[in-house]
Amino acid sequence: MNDFVVSLMLLGALSSQDGVMPFWATANRYGLMPESSGGLALLHLGSSFDETRTLQWHWGASAGIKSDTFGTYFIPDELYAGLRWKQLRLDAGMWRPEQQFCAASPLLGTLSVTGGNSMMSGNARNLPGYSFTLEPWDVPFTGKHLQVFGRFGDYCTTDSRYVKGALVHNTSAFMRGNIGKHFSITAGINHYTMWGGDSPEFGKQRITLNNYLRVLAGRSGGGDSPLGDQINSLGDHRGNEIFRLAWKEETWSLVYQYDKPYDDRSGMVWYNYPDGTRTFCLSFNDKTRWISDIVYEYHTTMVQSGEYERRLATQAEIDAADPHLYLDVESSQWYMIVGGADNYCNNYEYRSGWTLYGRQLGNSLFFSRASGMGTWNNLLTAHHFAVSGSLFRKFPYRLMLTASRNHGCWFSESGVYGKEYRSDPPLRQLSTGFETELPVFGGRISLVPAVYFDSGEALPQSFAAILSLKYNFVKS
Image (cartoon, rainbow, N blue to C red; front, side):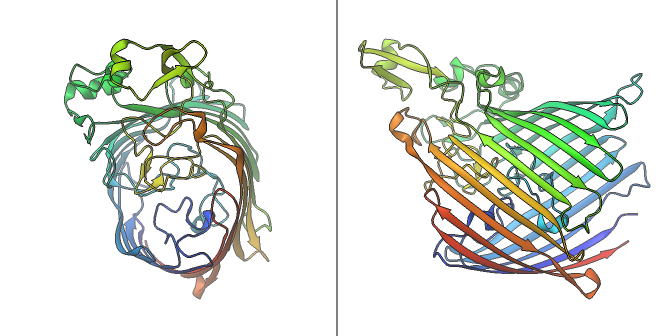
């Protein structure tokens, strides 16, 4: 039976620093939270899949009104419908990306900085589009020891950005090996391409079937494409490779995951190792324990396939003052930067980078530039620790602590390479947050008090307190 769900959340936030909330007050909140002192009202309606049926369907819609020092806004959050038949699934509309490594209560969200996916973390608003999904499917004749799963989808950007109306394609392919009763190994890749749109520098990019096939194959663009797309591949390609080891017992599980980003071919073939996010998660099935879930993450993005790879520039490139030109002062030769300095989540042509409405779609430790042109700190190292459970076995909580060293970026927002854009010494940052859920009236209403604190050089020092009230109604 499809469960029909209605939820209403009312939220008030008070920050000690005008114009800014601490990091954990807004990170991985789907771009909904006030960015300063203010409030939020959010209504959600929807249904879940009916697991008793062969052909299943679900739908959902949510919208809110957010008010802070930047103004009062109406926010369309979700509007989607989906069908499922066995392991095949089709979704269309706007829906939130799934998050893993979650707290004892789903209301508190993930314990991970990335939510298990450093390219689509739930840190920003939702991209409208469609996706075909193959859920874990047992490969025949393997005795359920081998499963495959993946996703194929297309989405569009809806915000005001440098290349207006840019499209996003996603292809994901994964394989899982179940070894024995307890152990599994998962490996796969998420690939994203930003393409099309109307560029103020290169004009309107043609959205044709031929160009779409070039995007799928990673082929270079035709003669009507920008020079960079003709030399390399059409659009801005990026993604991550994920490797996971999991051990599952009857009452607990232990997971190690390595999530390695890439920004071009050099990253795909591991020239950027050991960049990535390493996640360790110990989780108990009993969520009423004082400590039920523990997550530790180590983030590093310092290699980026090396400082740079270069070739001699042509005279035409020198005459055109190409932004990827680099003058070697020892030889007085002009070079073109063609690799390395991967510049994660930034791009010369699609200068808004991997953002939506000013927030990073991927790793929330990448902080957006004030201009909205990508991120300024994709060179970083960070340690993140989070714990969750239930206080007095009744009140779920989430505690997070994140310490980072932010080394800046190899490039300016316009794509010009320069060591002067790095932060030397690095900017240190410490961000903490604590939230707890107090169920009342049989659990239909939850009060969620929370406190957050930021100290350091990368973000303003600030303290904030938030009080949320959420009402849930479920009808089977």
